[in-house]
Length: 482
Image (cartoon, rainbow, N blue to C red; front, side):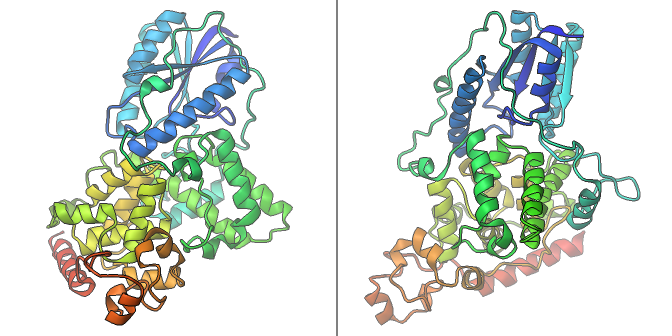
């Protein structure tokens, strides 16, 4: 049985390929209206970098839809309310969407579904964002996984819930009359802050085609060595798929199947790299399990005892961290890369997060908020779960006594200082022996490199050894009180 007209409500699934909601609507309907509602309220409203990405992603999706004979309808406001208005305008008898898993999204979808039922309109929801639903994989006792490693084993044994990704439709069935639509430009998403986001265009290609190209480039050039190179910020060893995943321009199922196909065609060469890469896709899945079962994960520690942690919360120190002016080159390089490109290498993310939380004793929520605003790949689940992991307050957290030393980490993973020199050019002439600890360099060496500590580059804002001990003492008090 077919419906005359249906609506597909897009959210973080800005793609035509492997989009279960869109596929179902096309199969069941004679006419399909494709809707996106820009909502700038709520805990997971896009930050500044995300808005930049969204602008370009919507523009490219709109062009792809027009090539297939239809049009992307754009509205602004509360998603559910705007959807109900469109239902009334079009007379749609069925609505399709891919599910969300954050608290606000779930509540809005439930409320919208009830309103649709009262209007005798059918609501159809699908899993378009994950390999498995957050409630699918069960422990032996019937609960959900709170530790990543057994979750990863279970996911490998079960495999994705859907067998294969679907292809993009060659033609879309437009309505006989298009509803009114706003323009992407009317959302005013592009940043107005000076000297920010200027390099984004050179770094990124938002949209479905950009996602597909990024995956193929990675599979051709880097996946085999991913197990080692993923830790090296001075090497192009990562997939850079995270923002495409965050906006749903590519599905994890597409990545999973295409990666396994590439491994098979390559005679299983690079199997270890593929295994590690897919485990990172699984970490994103695990983060959504945590988001679903701990709905206040963005603000509240999963381990309640950590709500009593004695934070310092020094606003001036936080500002230095945000600006990349801590006096520790690898930390400053990471924070500057984030500001300049909207992205930071994952190894460096762990280093700067550990520095903020454990050396500075700044609440992890401050870092989470800064990353949410400045990352193009800010994701409701991955961003929050990762910060709680470093803080030690998460379900599957780094041990509280694991404190990343930024100097030894830099010496190990940026051995020639290539990454640091790119983003902290004012110390680039320092000999490599001192590039990660310029404060140890003799005055004559600094003078020859035209570096004046405290003037052209800051002195260290804190002592690593002293603050490490302070953090361990503070964490021990929380452990004893729990």
